[in-house]
Image (tube, rainbow, N blue to C red; front, side):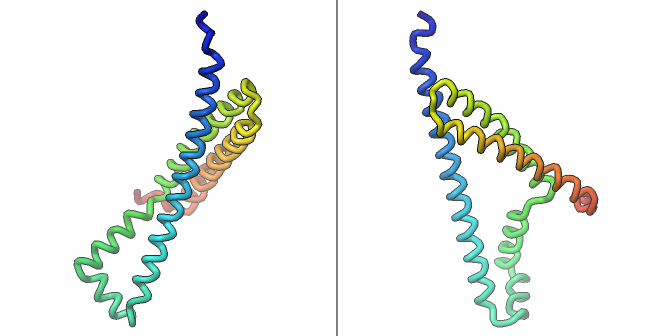
Length: 145
């Protein structure tokens, strides 16, 4: 009697995993589009200046200072980028086997593909973070943080 609704629970978990994956994909696309729009706006703003002197005057103004501050906060430190890559890598590395396990119980090949892709992406993020860590350490870029 306890496992009477086991099939329903498995179906719900598979549905939630798929909804989560598609939600994550939509978030990534929205982030990319936002970044692209900001990049285009910054290029358009820079094209408005007739000379370097006009740009220097703008940067020294209170509005220009605010603009430069917003740009500097958008660029993260190497340490934060590496930690972010490690976090994403760990989550993807654990998500992959979970999707593969759900796929095995429901014979859904798409979850198997997503699970394998997630595992590979997770390993890629972790390898990338390790390589970045060693390169930053060798270049001495992280010493001032």
